[in-house]
Amino acid sequence: MRIVLIGPPGAGKGTQARFIASKLRIPSMSTGDIFRSHVGRGTSLGRDAKRFMDAGELVPDEITIDMLRERLAERDATNGFLLDGFPRNAAQAQILDEMLAEAGTGLNVVLELTAAEAEIVRRLSGRRQCRAHGHVTHTDLLRDADLCNLCGSRLYQRDDDREEVVRHRLEIYRAQTYPLVGHYTQRNLLVTVRAEGPFDEVTDRAMAALRVLDE
Ligand code: ADP
Ligand code: AMP
Figure (cartoon, rainbow, N blue to C red):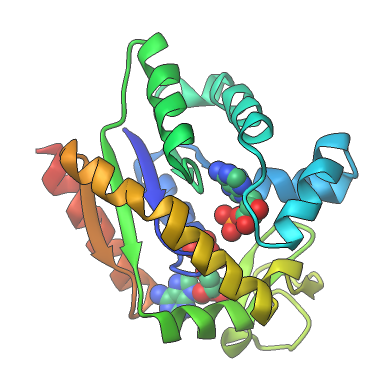
């Protein structure tokens, strides 16, 4: 299965990507995670990307597309993947199609996750992540305010989860990314799942939607 996950920031894409990818035994790839890893390691790509990320802007296509091309060329991507956070605009969608066509394949499905704006703002303002493994959690779920429930390491708040940046990221999503929902609907690739409610219920709805499409 070659799956694209699409939805506004905070819809739960990264959270669900882990569950779905492990159920389907395919790698999950997040361009945001790859960028954050570069920023953490202080690479030149990370330095280039950071100022766009901190401002809630998209990182320029030439940087993002080259990085994604390299990731898709890795061995584990040959039998399928779940892409979280790419494509985010029309140019990226076109390049992805071209890359897959060159490899003689194409997307099977685009899974859209939706949530009400108030819930998105609640999720993003409480989102916390650990540096050690990139585990994502929420302040409402923590046993200890500063420590990851999963691995016990220290948590941090993403710079781009500050309120004014969140507002800008939502605008960018509406203007540049949301039009892809129409594009993939026309191509008969889109399934939409409501991403509110308990984590496992969202996963169940997503898996049911993917199964329907597979039949
Ligand atoms: P995205 O990758 O779409 O930006 P994340 O997966 O990082 O979103 O989730 C954003 C925040 O919302 C995190 O703090 C996460 O723990 C929380 N979250 C994700 N799914 C749910 C859910 N079904 N119910 C409540 N909170 C959720
Ligand atoms: P995410 O982790 O998906 O919320 O992404 C965090 C940030 O990384 C975004 O706000 C962008 O600055 C950058 N980013 C991630 N994916 C892309 C992409 N496909 N195109 C451009 N920028 C991206």
